[in-house]
Length: 278
Image (cartoon, rainbow, N blue to C red):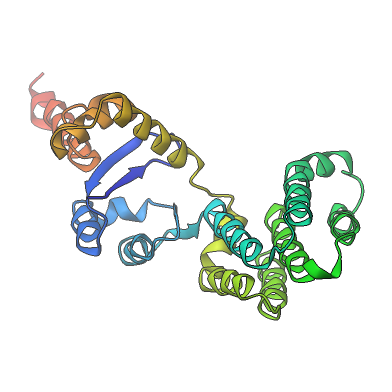
């Protein structure tokens, strides 16, 4: 049984834990919120799970829906590993290519800081070509795969402000990756093309699931330390107590809490008739 966790992107607090992650589970959870509350959702960001994205389009029509770039890049790395296992013939040379690829990824941010006043994108491309071009022809396809992935990293790290330019650059990358003779990279390009709209939205809006992923790791650690949980209700209350708002201990949803607060505030407000008597 898989659970779905909803987080507040501004504070990082755990909003609720949903028992299940199917379409019916998402619909049932979103139904408890009124239209006025759902209108206030400005951004919605998740991983590449289609049920989450479809539920956001259905229930949060006014929100900017994005896909976290971390999950897209993770699929790209997995495709590279598949290509390496299939194409790598000599262990030494293939391992050397992998080490160089990791070195490029680790030093990318450092090079950006060192060359603030220069066109760092062109410098990055030149660095990639100089380092990876020393490989022999036996690993040419693998070298192409690493180059294409690095070009995607360049697009991902660029501080885009114009949506049309961002989409145009990503389309160019998709065409390059789709034209390679490497099925793994063509598969990655197909995945990027499928979620292109959400990916560009997340890049332009600067939204991500970093806080959610961090709390997910903490939940897994708590589960291991507790040697498992009991029922779902007990688990939900415990997680809300540990990672949610302080008033979420009883397991009530945020909508019910706000509703009770409005009712109590209205009841405590003095009426006009009582003011006239005084």
